[in-house]
Amino acid sequence: MLCQSLIGLSDEDIILDYSLSSDAKLVKRTGSAAADMIGRGSRVRPGQFDWNVFSGAPREVMEATLKMVRTDFGSISPGYLDAIGFDSHWRRRFLNSVVRSTEHDNLACSRL
Image (cartoon, rainbow, N blue to C red; front, side, top):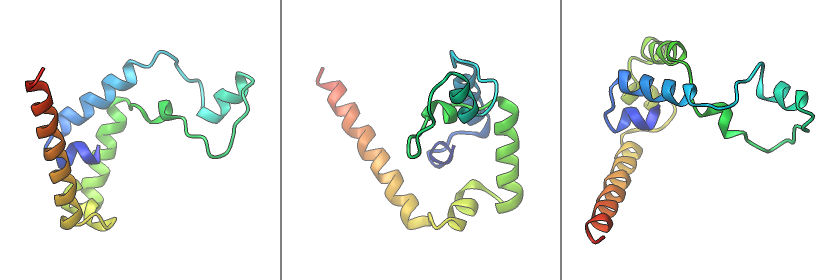
């Protein structure tokens, strides 16, 4: 969400992206990730991260999240990002790396 906002996606695009990811999950959870793992007989191992838990969010969750960030911080950028120390210097570095990466990908694709 933060990266998407930084590159200029609208709130609606961010919400749609997360909700589509959430809808596309093949396994529906009945509780927390830890509870589901225990229910399947799997052991919960400290230090292991289940990316599936954070791969999407229902539309209403993303709407509430974006609203909360804007209410509490005024905006994602610069408001929230400044508050967590990701100031204009770091935002510029991030955007420059994305642009360079995109230019590199475009150059590589043009050679195919």
